[in-house]
Amino acid sequence: MSVDDKAKRQVDLRGLICPEPVLRTKKLLDDASIESVEAIVDGEVNVNNLNRLARSLKMQFASESKDDNFVVTIERKESAAAAGSVASASSHSHVDPANMKASTTAQSEVGNVVFLGKDKFGDGDPEFSTTLLNMFLQTMFESGQRPRALLMANTGVRLMAPDSPALKVLNDFKEAGCDVLACGLCVEFYGLKGKIPVEQITNMFAICEYIFAADKVISP
Amino acid sequence: MNEERQTASKLLTANVKAGGCAAKIGAAELAQILTNLPLATSPDLLTGMEHFEDAAVYRISEEVAIIQTIDFFPPVVDDPYLYGMISAANALSDVYAMGGTPILALNVLCFPTCDFPIDVVRDVLRGGATQVQAAGAILAGGHSIQSHEPIYGLSVTGVVHPSKILTNGGAKAGDGIVICKPLGTGVALLGMKANLISKNADDVLLKSLTTLNNKALEIALKYSPNAATDVTGFGLIGHVHEMAKASGLSAQISVNRVPLLPEVYELADQGFVPAGAYGNRNSYEQFTTYINDVDLAMMDLLFDPQTSGGLLFSIPFEKSEQLVKELLASDIQAACIGNFRAGTSGIVEVASDERG
Image 1 (spheres, chains in turn red, brown):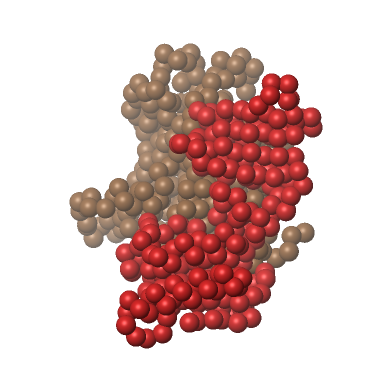
Image 2 (cartoon, chains in turn green, cyan):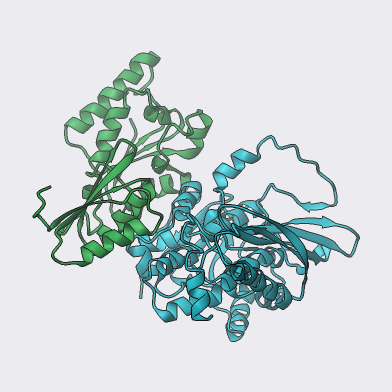
């Protein structure tokens, strides 16, 4: 940072007790001459609180983790993210699950929903059938299909296991703004609890809502 | 409160990371800690640990069961007298939440007496004693030790007729859910710490935090509630979930009807959200279904850990309107915020009608 560039502030807020980090950032941004604040914080709570601050000020927010800390940047710029749009929120490296949930209930927007009730594509040789399903997901992504949601139930939840070859493409869908969700009961049943991000775990109510609100439900 | 004491004890909350019920160990972590704990059972132990009840209840005769509870936390405000009052109100509330009457209380005190003038700790205890007295109970002693961080609370014994205990379980499908204090103490306390709330909001907050739940219980008992708890560390959703689960029902909450403390909506919107609210979200989001868009600030408030929160009653729906009326007439900011219904056990549906 050039020392004379007063419009861009860098602050180290590590070690401060809540609400100090969000309060100090707010005070900086209350000064209209400051264009952006780059804050180093420890702990995800601070990242989430600063994300909310940016939203309410309608400023652009970005965060990345650095070693054990997080670097949060808030810029005085009108942005779609500030308005709470899902797509831009998910382009940031850190996504507060609350944002997703807040603006993506099944009824708010209609589209297609992909329901994956097993980790296979059709019936046949198990390993081959799993490979086919990965190809299907890959092809779907590459051909530009962006369903409203990809819902996984029963053995389908295995697609989201850390060692699943399909995990990468599922994350690509998520990054692209699709809701990628696994049935919580199934996650527990197949022993994957703790291995799938908690914000991607849902329940039968939400699955029902997605399915019945969808234009089309695709189940390969 | 006088100026001098305020300055003397300016630092009471200074080094406290999570004050009040925000200091509570999370539900998920607690469940892990408690597994494999050898537990004795007895037919006279009427509530155990299985449903996260507010207190233990033990029958000592056909006519009398005793309620035993303990609650304490680090300072939530800098005024020691008010801190004592708040912590005591919070501890006494567990007895009311079980439908009982407190009879006896003991102080629990951990204090770095070298860091503060003696008046400070004296005032904390005085605040607590005032509340015990107002509750009609007897403060009979206590235990105190030196510690790095101040902690104060009470162990309270209460009594209740064994057939009149109110637990988390017992809610019936169709019951209305009545809350008896406005929500948002966790967020408001952060706002207070940040010096961002108005004098009026500050007054309302302190009044709510120091108000005993005895009056609300006394009124509600006239309407034969089916179940009760108080809204504390697990937040509104957490406690509604525990009630629903213990009763084998699902619940629906209409967010627009939830009474809020002044200015907490704006504070939550700007990111003044305590860590405990995120923890509660992690623990309870899997049981929460959003019927339509609920905005983020409101959701944060539904998960906000409450200190000295209000009682929550499950009461036949046709009686709930009259109950709320009578509570309001007694200056208790109550509201019917939803209902219990037949459905997947423990699921909490959150719905919002369009705002204003």
